[in-house]
Figure 1 (tube, helix red, strand yellow):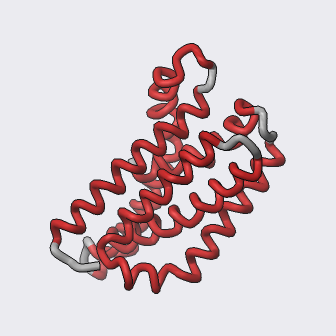
Figure 2 (spheres, one colour):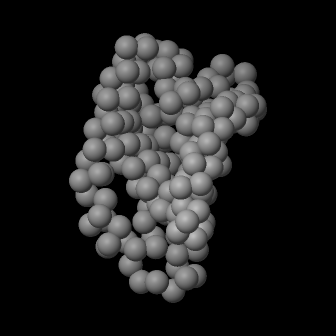
Figure 3 (cartoon, helix red, strand yellow):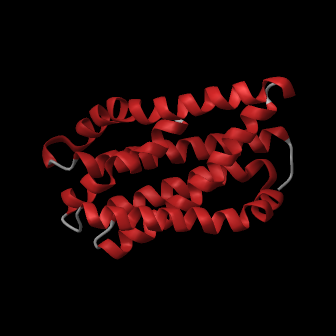
Length: 178
């Protein structure tokens, strides 16, 4: 679900903009640029944030992602959508390093390359599976409204929030202080 949830944005942001009537594919490209800026900004801050939050870092990243999906789903204008893209870039740039660091730490040093390769394959598979898993849920949530793409962002927000809470509880249970 980690990889599927993150890919709802890349698979559906242009459709969301058109469905909401606030943009088109060109605006979607600009949204991707804001997403990248969020990633760059978090890249500059990640070390300090990770040191401060310790085992709570991934949970906070998922909650940032959930907040971003809510902002984009409710965006009344393209500017608000771009703010959501920026926040998603921040959140994804917290979660993804943690995923790959945890994968690398879970295997002996000689197997790290293979484990990271498998994780990257799973990431791509998650992008492939994302519409097949989430579109039926989004269709059920949207009902007759015709806003299935908006609903998919609600679903992503819900799953991101759930994963965030699970990660925070797991961190608290491990007894490590933030």
